[in-house]
Structures are given as structure tokens and as C-alpha cells.
Length: 212
Image 1 (cartoon, helix red, strand yellow):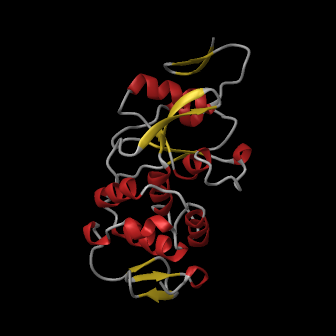
Image 2 (image 1 turned 120 degrees about the vertical axis):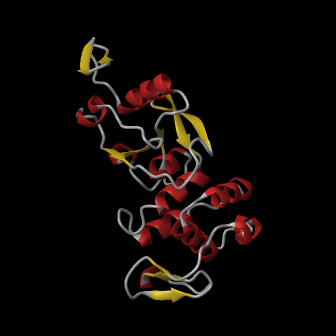
Image 3 (image 1 turned 180 degrees about the vertical axis):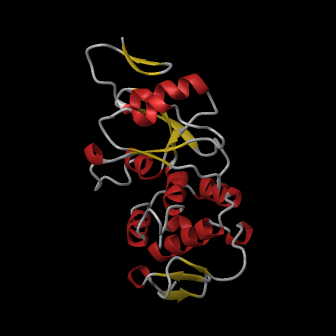
């Protein structure tokens, strides 16, 4: 066995995979464990195949007040590891186990994964890239989306999701009930300047502006 750090060992003779490390953490911590989300999850569900899996970072979202072990963040893994600590959605909601490189990993359903992506706009994800992700989501489940959006505490994410979904014209959009979603009050801005979408009181970049 080869030590990775305090409390972690890898089998000798083979480089450990990041998927195996995440699987081990999930097995050790049960329900209070990090999950694979955002673009990583969308790819695994078949919604972001234009992205290159071999170059894709693992996007890991931990429970609140959960700190990653040093061996996980300090090890030189075969792919980048991005760690996002967001608490705008309930822990454990809309997750499912998926096989990744031979390991069962707790992974965001696509309905949750797109919300996790939008949480990073515009700071860590370009609005145009977020719009492209939304355009490629024709088969989401409106019942799952409605429950997630009603649970979401982020007014910005909720408004941006509704705007991009409306803009994309997906069939499932008409089954959502925005009246039950927390949309707050006042204008929210993704950028300074840009174009104002009055329906959602949202200031968006020119490149993704569309009348809805």
C-alpha cells in the first residue's frame, strides 16, 4: 500500500484515481459526504458531451461545515479538482449514484447540476457558457426542477435559471410555476451595463440577451 496522507492509503503499483478517492470519502462519511456536481455531473448524464472528459475538472460540492482532508487537496491527481462550498440548496436533494471509472459516486441529477453551474455566474462561469449549457438541456424533469427551485435560497440563481430556460424554449419550462419560487425584489445584475430583462428584473450581458 502507498500512503497518500494521514488516514489514506492507495494500492501499490497503480496510480490512484480521483474517482476512487471520492468514492472512499463517500463510503466513509455516508450521507454527510461531498458529491460530484455542476458540469462534471451534466457530462456524466450526457448533456455536455462537447466538453472533453479527459481534461475536465472534478467539481466537488461538500456538505456545509465539511472540510476536505489534506491528502485529497494536496495530492497530484490525474485531473484537476475544483471544490465549491455552496449552501443554497438542501444537502442530499436531487442526487443519485452513478458509475464513474468503475466507482459508484453520489452525483447531482442534471436538474441540480445546472443550478450548481448557475451559482458560479459570472464569477467562475461565463454567462454565455451557462446559456450554452441550458440550451443543451431539453429533457429535464419539471417536478424535480420545481422542488429544487422552491428549495433554493439564491434569488440570482432562480431568476437566471428561469430566464435562460425561457430563452431556450424548452418544453418542460411551461410546467414550472414561478409563483412558488423565491424571486425576491429589486433588480439583480450579472454585469454592469448590459441589457435589462424586465420580465425577470435581471441585467444580463449583451451576448445572451433575448426578449422572452
